[in-house]
Amino acid sequence: CLLPEHLEGEYWTAVETGIHEAIATYSDFNTSVKINYYDPYDYHSFVNASEAILALQPDGVMVAPTAPQYTKGFTDQLQALDIPYIYIDSNIKEVPPLAFFGQNSRQSGYFAARMMMLLAREEKEIVIFRKIHEGIVGSNQQENREIGFRQYMKEHHPSCTILELDLHAERNDEDNEMLDEFFRTYPMVKNGITFNSKAYIVGEYLQSRGKKDFNLIGYDLLERNVTCLKEGSISFLIAQQPELQGANGIKALCDHLIFKKEVTRINYMPIDLLTVETIDYYHSK
Image (cartoon, one colour):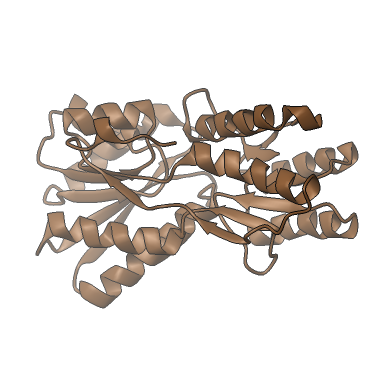
């Protein structure tokens, strides 16, 4: 498996839990998994990690793709070696895999914009918060969600200005200063969204500043995100069952390799909207 580097408790931790659960299920068939990691803000890191995987000569590969042109170098070699591969998190249609597990990210962004404007109503400005490093957002999912979001806004709220605040991916200590500066410059902005899983960065900032009049939408059920949702600094969280993505990806590889079963190519995860009232009744598995 090739996944983005992450800290314990972040989004990919849940994906790994699903991977290990699936491997345990197929343990009778002598299955094992080796997880390699790449820096999501460094395309060369993906290339290096993918070459390390090719050197292992695995029977199958599950990968969270990076930018298409870098992913293609890897998948071309996998195809040449006749090694089946599965995508999770984002799909690259130009380089079709054996199977894909993840959200329809453009549809998810489109839906998020609809939810945002239920909160914002006739507001004339909203903001997109990003974590970015040297121009790289860090995942195809985030870019595609933003495309879907902007499509909805263009179709339904063309006069609403979309502001952007790019926080440094590698320098978390500067986030609060940058957010302070943003809200000094745009004191009337009351609605925002982040397309990555670190909505808590903005949520915890809003709490620390006692800013209760701001609606924030984020993605994924990280513990810190859920805490912000319960404490009111995040209005909605959109979830996508990462454990199931990890487990089903491994299951599809095993079905293909061991049982020679047909595998469904496109497997979209649900787009689950969670609020403080529903979060305690939601189970991601």
